[in-house]
Image (cartoon, rainbow, N blue to C red; front, side, top):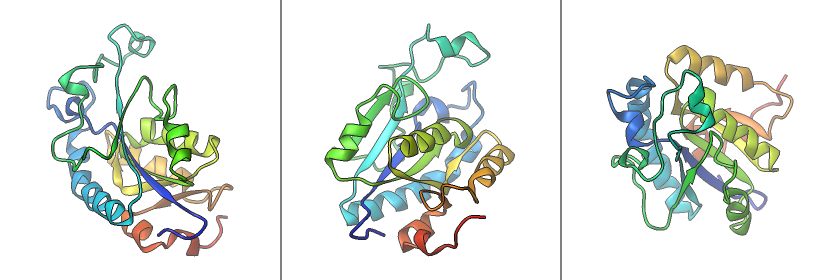
Length: 198
């Protein structure tokens, strides 16, 4: 995967205990459970390559602006529900990055942290495809990193939302700066071999 020009980081978004609670107000659980195994496989691949792994997790406050709409408070800062799920292979050398809003880049030190490690490409996994994954992918591009939606390592509250979000970006004018790939394609380094977007 890594070439002389590229150094990837794996950004794993919002795989927190609240999102796997059956009583959670956002019904992501059935689809999110499916991506645990492929994310762990990708983590192992990144460890082998000595590439950075980041767990970016919501750390909201009960009176946050975003809860003035239909969204119910969840993943509150410094609570058990905002912790990374035990099923993921998080280790001490990984960055655990609590974030105050949807994007892992918003009001966090992520940009500087990645640059200090020579990262040029952000591969984004986790939930939800159409919210926090999407905003993180877009902010990666806005911070001048190449970005990859990881198709089999992301999930939304419905399969339709997941698919429709990814379909919007399968062919886009930013290719190959912005791509939709499976974890297997990423590990095989096949992204750059794909034809230009239409």
